[in-house]
Length: 107
Length: 120
Image 1: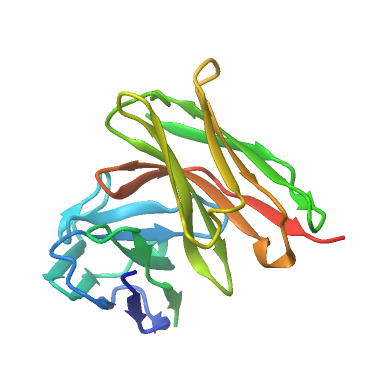
Image 2: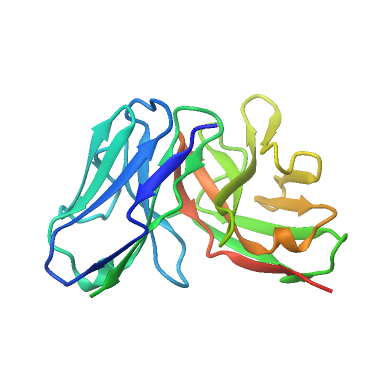
């Protein structure tokens, strides 16, 4: 199966900072990559799908890029409500697989 | 707006069966454009996809190799819901379990999650 590797495991940042999260696939997944945001006590929700398409209700400060095996999620100016764990997920190769997550925490 | 409401027992004894229900509102379990999935999350395994059920012209299932000998996922069209059963559980099956709607490979709507602890 396709292994998804996220880095770093934890990011300590201050509100207003620019944040870049990385996700690497063990084999090419074309552009079939999604990012999810997960806050404690809440259901995870999609942030980006198709590598760069923002999901419904996601603000423009979130952007995704990449192709093949290397992908990034960028938050241009981190807001308080953005502190969460972010997961990447590929949906090219069956079974669909997730990365282990990057926790974005307050510095 | 689609919502998934999970229910089920949070404490299961080793060797017994884990059972969870996911009630769907805002969509149909018989929709031919989506699949209905179960995922679990634990510190040791991260997010692990377990299986799915879906209707195209008949009902079908797919399961993860890690659990395929122990898992059942069934729809209930009369109540617009679907179920997870995992047999012969061990403490390794302790996790938060989510039901999720998937469209085109994207996990677009999640339940709130149910913590299931396997312990005697």
